[in-house]
Amino acid sequence: MQRSRASRRSLVPAALALGLVLGAAGAASAHVEVDSPTAQALAVDAQVAFSAEGESSTAGIADVKVVLPGGLAPTDVTLVEAPDGWALTPTADGYAVAGPALAPGAAAEWTVKVRQLPDTDSLVFKTLVDYSDGHTDRWIELPQNGSKPEHPAPTLALRPAAPGATPLAGATSSASASASGAASAPASASASAPASASAPTSPSAVPSVTAAAPKDDADGTSTTAVVLGSVAGVAVLGTLVVLVLRRRKSPSA
Image (cartoon, rainbow, N blue to C red; front, side, top):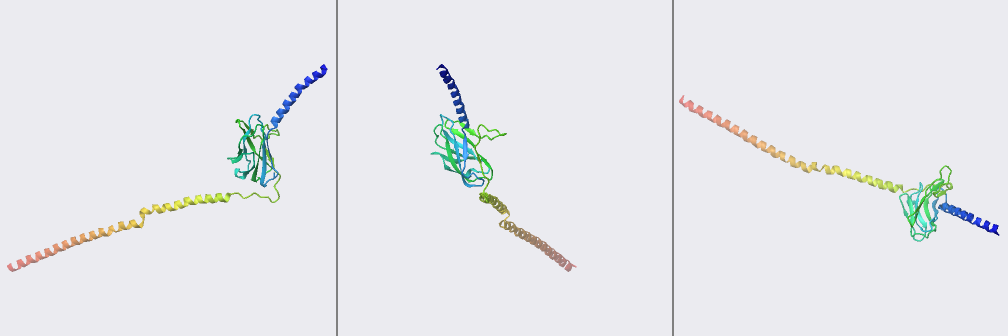
């Protein structure tokens, strides 16, 4: 009996130790998962599901921020399903889903629809999980040298594109149209500038200058006529004087 009790007592610490190890392994294995039934390159309107496990026993997940991989824009993603009261908001490099904080330990699960998956073999979605107490879990690490990271970023493997699949057309035409419209505005402004600059030399200003010229010429002509008339008068008067003097001399002679 004593040996049996001793053996039982020795098993208790071992069980506790095993439980701690398993508990630690469970905490370490908590992560963000991503999956899609249409995980194929160039798939259109593909639904991608995410699940972020709640790691806190005292605080719940309040929001999740996802960084989109290359080839995806925030406008390409729309929300399909999320916890009650949660909504999707585009960010500069991805999107965020947020709402009332979940119960401690509850997983945040949401599904988005992607306009078209890129033509690649895998997609990495770096994710930040924010809790109601201000704590943040950063699932952003990538494998290096074959080792598994402690906080791996969720990765979605894609099958090769279906035969004949092609990328969807982007909205580049509207952008180019707006750019051409913006370019035409300065052109019209520059075209109107010379017209306003030529106003001081418009034809309406010319007559005021040319109208004064005849006035000056007329004044010069009248002056010349007066001078010539005076000279002629003096000459005539001199001739008369000479004649009178000659007549006076002739009788006396």
